[in-house]
Image (cartoon, rainbow, N blue to C red):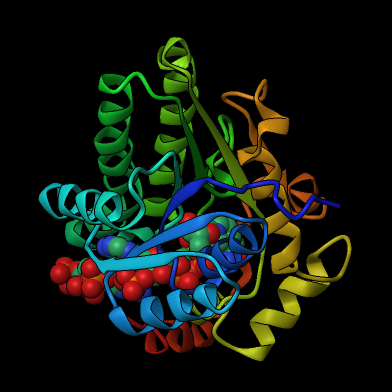
Length: 282
Ligand code: HXC
Ligand code: NAP
């Protein structure tokens, strides 16, 4: 579908790039000629993914960084520039999420998710956007949201994530206009369910919940990572230069089946809640 050098010469920073969808996007971008810089908290997955990218013949660097800490974000951008020369593309993919009944949340639980998703996205967007504007250099930003981020949507049982992702979508659309004169383009992808260790361990941590989600899906299947990575490639490529402020849903039609992906959790018995709460993971 894509020419092999579609992203040649591009220097792409991906948050949460060591695992899950971030890793899959990073590997796909590398195959298409891009150099990568990965950021997340745990070193091991970052080192592994950077090695796998280098094995494809691309440049790859990484640094550990908590996206909630703006000073750490500034240091990470400086490290990326040292490694790659300049960064021209940002993918805000890092996220935190869990299933919980909202009345059981602590304020800190809400803050943890808002801090990673909304503030973390703002931190990298601000850090790189400022540099691009000052250097009169164009830039490209892709934010990974969720289908429940859309205006008029939302979802029960993932309230901190729904609030944070809605904020990221508002940021995407606001800056698409504000920064267009600077040659900075922002878009978003709203994925439906794509199996990853991070999401599944927190949102669908049993075979029963997984089967239930699959059965509810109009296509009776989850997304494949290559499907999402190819959409991300298109949106970041020069072929999409006139696409700005858009949020593309990739969910096989699940969103249309019913707004609020987790609203069905209304029917979960207490026993299932006990299991979910016990399976909670840091
Ligand atoms: C209720 C919870 C909880 C849970 C944590 N907390 N898990 N509350 N239910 N399941 C509370 C804690 O008690 C604490 O509050 C506060 O949240 C912060 O928790 P920490 O563990 O100290 O925070 P931290 O180490 O920063 O971890 C952040 C995290 C964690 C979000 C809680 O899950 C994480 O690191 N996640 C990163 C990866 C991830 O979530 N990937 C999935 C993305 S999937 P107190 O008050 O006790 O201090 C995704 C998909 C969306 O977004 C759409 C799906 C289809
Ligand atoms: P994932 O593997 O858990 O990805 C989350 C990444 O964010 C991890 O690499 C994690 O690494 C990083 N991260 C978390 N907190 C961080 C912090 N404070 N600072 C820096 N990095 C942090 O899950 P995923 O499923 O691939 O999710 C990727 C993106 O897709 C997220 O934006 C998610 O909301 C979105 N999404 C996924 C699905 C799905 O079905 N999988 C559906 C809709 C949307 P560390 O823990 O090492 O920091």
